Length: 208
Image (cartoon, rainbow, N blue to C red; front, side):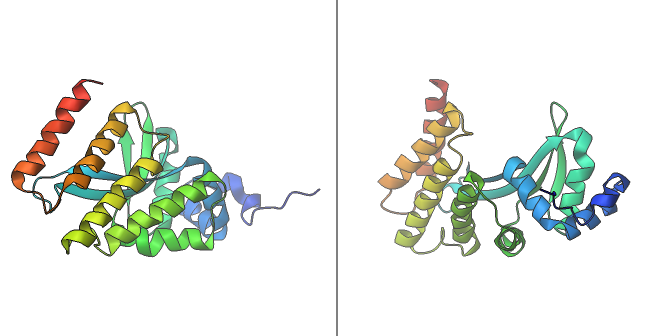
């Protein structure tokens, strides 16, 4: 059976700069979807922040990690998404392109994968992650005590299930503490409550 050719396949060896990569991605957007199936990562997290309403600041991330030798590819992917993210070098000759702005995730990243669907387990990961984006984008984690608590708790539970295969024992213990703490709250936490959570996490992680 003859293999289908990529639109840009005849000139694949002519890709020498970021604009060549952009041209390739624009003509072969399904290639990027397939690449993300293997190399992409959809994550969510909760940072401790005593100034936040619940003592927790939600965060979201769509990223792709590669060897720093392939940084140009990551910069091309960022350019494809109109430079709405950033490319960062990490230790051990690793670089990552990351998009974190919730509006970009909602209005650019999710529609892209609606048009060029992922397959396999990565698609299930995306579906869970989209729920996180929806909570954060529509600010369901702030406002009325009952609704915002339920939304923050849902956010934490989804994070645990979303990242469970990548999380180490410390991260899993940390999110479990946050979930249990949220369940006990009957009102918005005080500064003392938030500091107690921070201390509880600090002490508990020392024992692991």
